[in-house]
Length: 235
Image (tube, rainbow, N blue to C red; front, side, top):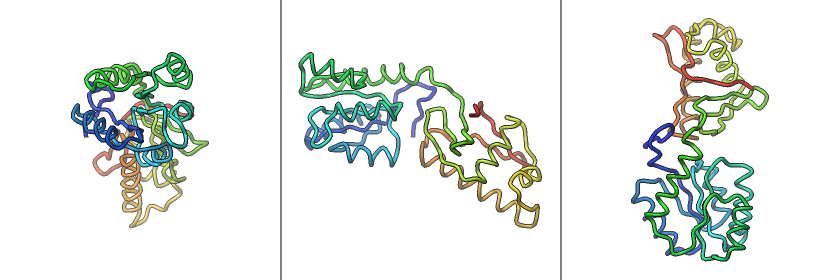
């Protein structure tokens, strides 16, 4: 999988919400040909399921959707998501455009849309949204969540939180395993190394499953300990 943060912004994760099966397939296939990772869904409920499965950088919405319409979805996304919101719809009146932008849309296209223009507009929007993105991770002890530079939140267990807080007390520096065991309240016995390695492996997998473009910046140092090798903000 290509990464674009911070990079060329050539590959975007896109969810397309369009209830017309033929048009949805056309747009998914067309945008995929530009190198984007595109998933197509038919309504707001399917969008929510897709977003829960994996985050999106861009959401493309039709206005006239069954059930919850595109403008309502845009309002909801703007409150909860850092993604770009793009309307691609048959509704071309000025009032519809104004209402869409007021609902949180970043771009507005009237069908039929030229895929080359749409691709260029999506990349330009991604540059505005993500091009100067914060490169730091952040950790919130109150909510027990770690956030990567893209803003994706990773829920932490109590042990994972204690482990990370121990490392970020001296970011970039090695923390000895014996000190980690102490912070976790675990005995430094025959099974201590295995318990720690298992926890770190599970945490890495958790981070990767929520955003494959950002690996957990925790590195083992010659089997002596671990270090957090990235900028991090603490809440």
